[in-house]
Length: 155
Image 1 (cartoon, rainbow, N blue to C red):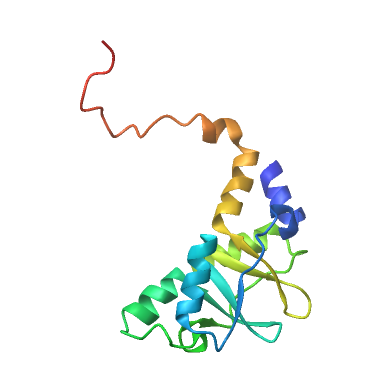
Image 2: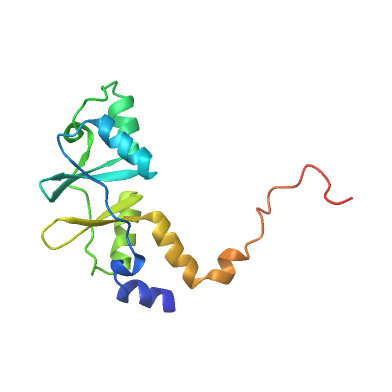
């Protein structure tokens, strides 16, 4: 099967990961939320200097900040997910898919050999890649067969 081979052979860089948004670990949650809203993204990377030390996601905001009743000035290092699983641009796509599936992640940091962030890989990019392999199947899916129109169509 062509897809199975491509998942083994093609690199993460083929998926064109998004440019990462980065903040220092001492930045407040308010700065992170503002940056995420401005760029309409679901996560950002937390660094110490130029080295990746964590990831802050919408889930972290809900579970570790809002649900815990913490303030907007809480530093990211207190509420981020430390030492996130990541991939390198030359890693095979199947490794990224495996990490996402096993960990339930929607975003993976893409880092260089020195651990510096170079991108963010989202599940959206993976889905787009899969659609490229099965365009007729995906684009020609019928509406949900279990739902029925409430009103008659036509004149």
